[in-house]
Length: 119
Image (cartoon, helix red, strand yellow):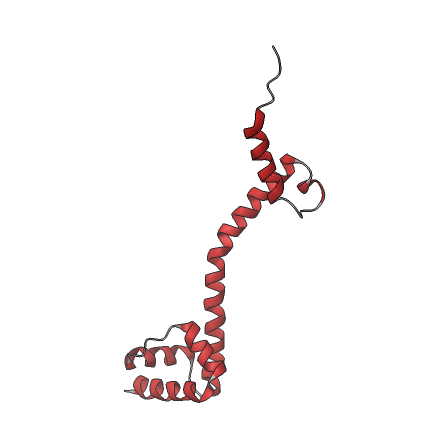
């Protein structure tokens, strides 16, 4: 029986994989098997790291807010508690931006949070 060459669908699938593996080193961009393995791993990392990125940014914002708070004599946790009691609903990314870009506005927020936290 003659060998079946699988036709255009298989070629399209292979071309798609090889195009995605362009720029990889060594056999990973030359051989289909190597490209498939590396692409699978890369897509798994991409999926995972889209979630990890959100965690890392939140940690960074908290570090920035904490540093700005400590310069003004309050801990991060007391600051967030005071904001919550005051009814100020700003997320951490906005607070971090305010802390860096507009220190006087951040100072006012700290003042309000301090007074609310001490009540």
